Image (tube, rainbow, N blue to C red; front, side, top):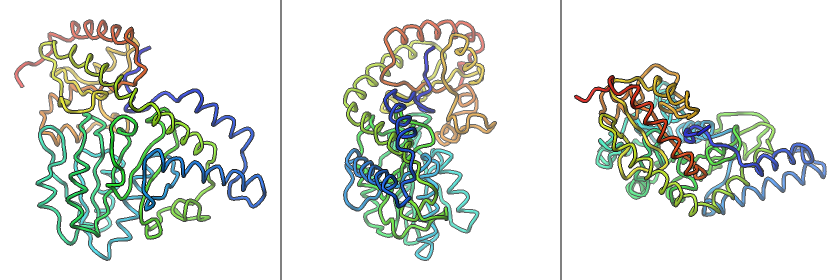
Length: 381
């Protein structure tokens, strides 16, 4: 098996699984219980929080909220800050290239009376800085943009956005950092909140964080016992939170090694695919090397996924969170690509442990699939 869908989820590290298992069998106590065992676990969670702040190089303005993943983190940040700030303004800004957990949350806020405006997207799939400047005014209270696009791999201009927003102090700037952590450098202190999912960096599913400033001001969207600073009530999942911190430490420790491996392997795959007539690479060359969007115009993406699956090569059409929906991918539409290109697109996303042997096997399978569909390719786009 060759797994090329790491943007959807990654394989958990073995010692992360072991840490989770050990916590569940030996330290299963409720950290909110007043007895000694509960207090001990609470201390472990506090230590994990502090370690995470160090791994992310966060300043003292940030606090860490443990969540079930980036979808919940994005919802807490966007809904919570929008509701808190609505007395100052009701305009919220995003792009159409965001993950569904951001786009659908912003649309839900629009249904609640907020004024949602979309920042334009450039042809190479990046937030248009000039469009952002035109949309900003005194009524804007929330801006959100992902760090690395999950469909195309473009690195978004977070530094430029942050600098522009310095002139608008009441704006909360949220960054979805899911696809970039440990692989693309970012000063997270430039944002007001930042979300992560553990299963995107070889941790466990159902585990994430929200790093956020102004935690005492955010409006909770989940109510109950007041856990996680009162922002995210519910029994704290100590085993999965400790495992997340471990996965994050490992990713952080290996980031230079990972970036080198991903660049070398991603560049090799891209150079190989570029040679095939009629096949189009949609990801711009300055995108991250570990996410590659490719189109076979005239062939359905689902057909291609099934064709590669016959050779036990597993890749995706678009985001796994929306790939089963019939509508065209919004990132590709925002870039102005034709329906034929969008419908024929697939996404390859690699991990650092992809071996040279696996790359060669992928090349062999690609040649075979190409021969199967070559007569269907449309060259006039």
